Length: 307
Image 1 (cartoon, rainbow, N blue to C red):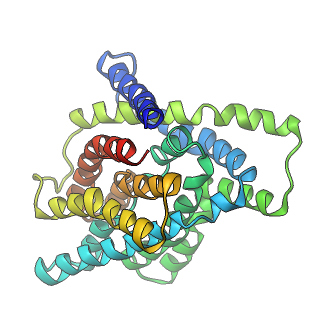
Image 2 (cartoon, rainbow, N blue to C red):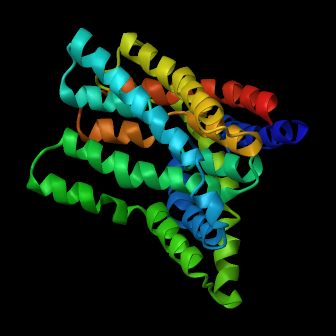
């Protein structure tokens, strides 16, 4: 247990440093975009390729992914049912809410936790691929109908560097091949920057969120946000835990991984989707901010209890 707690302390410390860097004026809140783009387009793809290409296939195809699929399959319909049948929300806003209640931050937070808490960066790769290859295209088809939208949704995963890097790494792992050391060393060097840069950007974003102007439709935290928080921060990890423990009989590291991944907060790109489709911006933004704040003590408690 002490090792898990120590890993969380290390991750939180770097994120707090990012917050303090913004508070102290060493970096502007807008610089978070630069750090995030560096992590997303350069460092993290390098890390994912290096990790997945040398991963044990058992960790890539573990039952942990099944627990996440079950949790998503329970949480999303629950939100849509309440939003559509009781609150009479439209299809597009209900879709944003369902994503906010289930789509986890597998990149900026999932990868550091996978590496430093669980000890295997490849564990998060199947979840990341499931979200990008399945959840995102299907959601885009619902948000924006039409032939052009169908093509764009189906091609979307190929435009995501994390997906491309993970799929390339998976191809190397399946075939048992590897790049020469001359090529792997710079990839590993870049990958080494992924976690600290992402955590610094995360901390800086928390500082920036306090100073950012409100979204055009932002008027306070309502019942939709409360339901999202209830489902995302409590129901989803609870369902994943019960599925892993009772249905699949998982123990130890697999049980911890299943519960921790489900407890990850709402991914920031859900707000990007809300802005893009001009619906549910208040809901998405509040969900990202509040579930992120709740996730730290929740995941620390999970790590202490199951680690």
